[in-house]
Image (cartoon, rainbow, N blue to C red; front, side):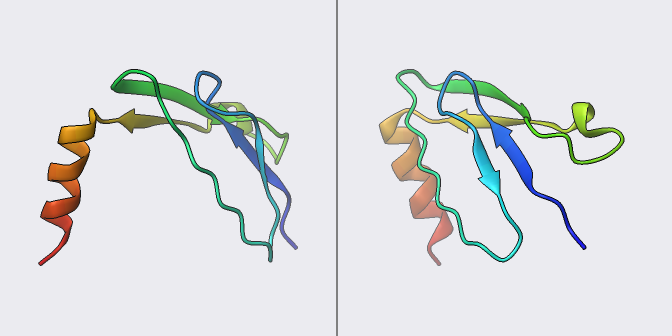
Length: 72
């Protein structure tokens, strides 16, 4: 059995619930390039408060360069 996981990036978007068996799509848009902190937002067992991550927003030109590097 699995649990509902939720996470959020406070400066970029509201909370997203990740429910087992469901497909979610989250689009983020930052006003400025940089790294934005994200965290678990739902009690999902011991240690959930330590589930943190970051989202890196690129400047438009840097994003296009990144995407070009992804294509062989």
